[in-house]
Length: 88
Image 1 (cartoon, helix red, strand yellow):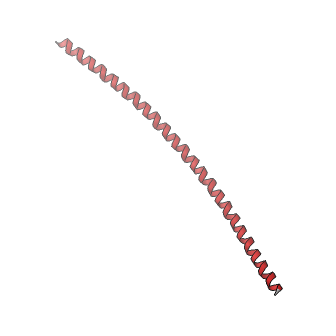
Image 2: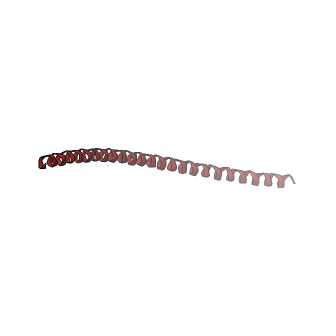
């Protein structure tokens, strides 16, 4: 009976050791996966920032162009009025 208990206990200890080893392996894999996810998240945030900055720059360029168009339109209206005045 004592031998059976020792054998049974040894078997259980081996099973626990094996489960502990599997758990360690899974933890290492999860840590690697988390590192990969963190890296991807950082890359995406960097890309997002670049896109936002490019959008902002383009918006500023468009604002300048609209301002130039407005100015040109105002000048054309003034010229039109002058021509009308001269034709009177």
